[in-house]
Length: 370
Ligand code: HEM
Image (cartoon, rainbow, N blue to C red; front, top):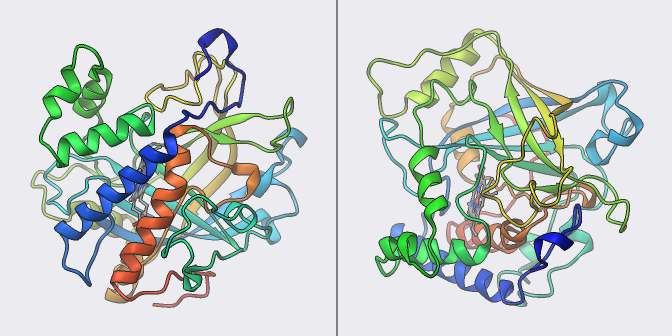
């Protein structure tokens, strides 16, 4: 790690043993998935409970300033009307499928379709994990989709993958979570605070604000031209749900269902530039970037039209889908320790899950009918 005085904007500082921590984390999570689920019915290790996958439209702002016309926001890249068809999977973040009376965070994963151009994983083949799953050609990368992932809390639990590995092994392995938080030589009090505040009751997944938590490149990767952003989604629907008096098992899905039966829903897609390399770090996902120092800028609108989305076929599509931050154009490359680990974690663990369930990893193209 570079020290604070030398941090540069939009620059990564990988730890020397990061890949080893990533491998150990993935191996641990695979075992955890095998223990939690039947062999041919694996669910996601994180976000296994979904509230449905909904059809949406991603509309890039008209007349964006030249310097904002990057990646999917480039005018002319998108289809007519600056618009991409999309699927959005809403989920609970917990690693268990639980009753909605338990507080949780909500995950928002959007996949844009018809996005032309090679994606990072097509160009930059994974040479680090030279194993059976990585080399399985039945999971070849698809070229026409772009994913963005969000959570309903501004920050992630931990700074780096090393801390994530320690957290999951302490919580689900050797039962040493108190030591993890309070170790006088390596305490994780900020993580404890985040865990105590991140889970909430929600009126509906359609009513929340969402944050990317982690940073992304915005445009050129050339030194001197690099810029980094975080993303946020602001809910803008006219219709809002009320908190039910009696929280039923799947009230979050029901709230979405009632909303989308009557009215469309919408979000503004915002970017926030990193303007200070110390106060807005790339390598520490526990730090919220100040919107006073760097205000959000609107670059697109997400429209979710009125629809029925909970047929058994469409719910199965939500289950067997795959969303990953690295499924991306190079202009939106994920940055920072947690993101670098996610490159391998999502690829390996989604292949592991789908292979066990005997499902191919198929990218949708928007023509799906249920
Ligand atoms: C910035 C931090 C993170 C954010 C915002 C985030 C967000 C999400 C979201 C929204 C999903 C649901 C995707 C879907 O609907 O299919 C997801 C799934 C998942 N996340 Fe994360 N996550 C983060 C960090 C991590 C880390 C550090 C790991 C492990 C190293 C991890 C492991 C997973 C796994 C295994 C899945 C399920 C993948 C699959 O089987 O398809 N996440 N994450």
